[in-house]
Length: 249
Image 1 (cartoon, rainbow, N blue to C red):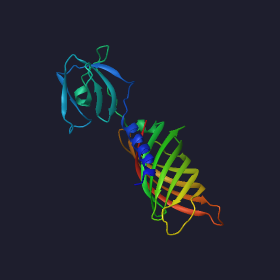
Image 2 (tube, rainbow, N blue to C red):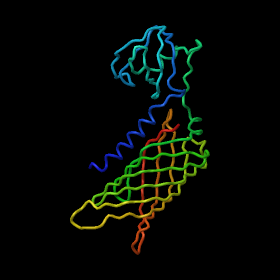
Image 3 (tube, rainbow, N blue to C red):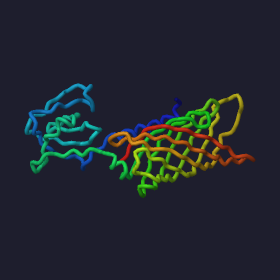
Image 4 (cartoon, one colour):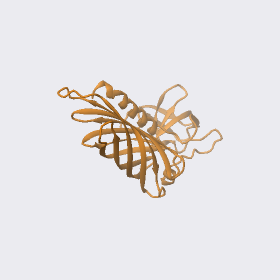
């Protein structure tokens, strides 16, 4: 991968981190340990070593949540991760047990924001896409997508804005239709034939399916038919197939 692709990787990593780090309440929240003790891990998983133990009666702050792991800070400034099972007896400021809200399919139906990454085939070339979307209603979403296209003889960069219509948002396997427009820039990578860089407008029609998985994750499969409006006599038609994972809020 060349240096010019590095910024796209950075965007994708940022999207993944934002999708992972979510706490269902206002951050941070101060709670008191009611169990005998809780183990603090260096990372969000049992494979990460335990480096500290918080005892009953001590207060901690919950900063964010990653599935069933919570990032916490102790009064003496230590920061680590605790599993949900050990936090279920924690108490809030009024002495009541903290209620941890599970994300379920109904939350997927009510989502407002989503983001993710997809990869696949773009007219015989590889394509990697990072996107974000906002749902105006359960049936209508607008999306902005940034894509890097990697081919044998040329690379490309594609920016798309599209409107997605989802007729059955209450289905776990929810099909959708998409209409959009964008800009594609093609940069030849071969020096055998000298051709100029090209920037063209595009139009697309697409179909796809969102498949709810668990928590705040869903799988997305889609097909797009792109019409590249070139300055030459003939426009180009490009078929695109993609598959990827997304998160929602």
